[in-house]
Image (cartoon, rainbow, N blue to C red; front, side, top):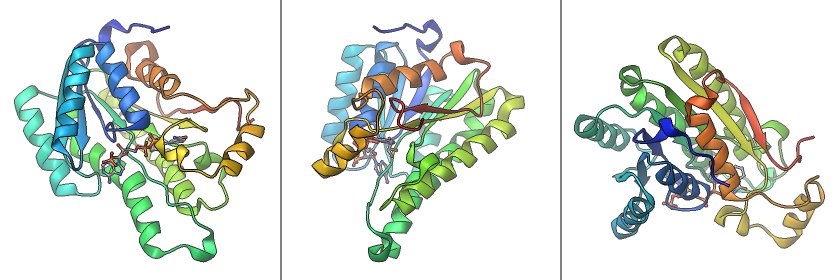
Length: 252
Ligand code: NDP
């Protein structure tokens, strides 16, 4: 059942990595709340325009921006021209992420770099590019998408776990530094959520995860997007610097 947050109507929110998976579900939920949903894409402009159309059919306005979260110049250009045209962005969901699972013995330097650059540095670059805009906006809320693995560690996910653990430190620093400007920052740590990223996992690995989840099922993208909307809304106005697990009890 959808909870409607009236203050999200017309709020301008940027979601990174919204072309697929959890990010797409978040963008759709924001559209249903009547937000102006801004999302980045990297390649196919046609697919981005399809998503814009899909979101606007659901509700609100939608604007695609072309940038890769590892390219600072493109991030700045895209965000600056958007803000000039539409005004300050007051919500950010740093969702874009990749994993390159590999035993430590076989891990390549390039893989470490790309995971840290995308998951951790990318979130910092986008947050930094938006910081001026945040100071001009009201009720700003940043939601970073971490992972339960950033709290627990995981075999074969050394760089991924480190990137998500780093995101926790980043979130808390942003929360402390910008609280006086009424900017909140929180991080959610999903467990096993059904998306392309997890579809790629071996069946045995999936079974292994399932056996460790007290609720005995994987999570859905919609369950994650509901939590994100709550954190973007004023209903969570006294919550900042928080690390919130959404994992069916996996961490317990
Ligand atoms: P998907 O692989 O389904 O989607 C990832 C999205 O991120 C894609 O839209 C992709 O863009 C985008 N992206 C990747 N790299 C970049 C980049 N360099 N610049 C811009 N966009 C980029 O992932 P999920 O939906 O499963 O995961 C979303 C987030 O949730 C990630 O941060 C992930 O770590 C986290 N998470 C996921 C869990 C899960 O079980 N699924 C569990 C815990 C955390 P493109 O379409 O162009 O490839």
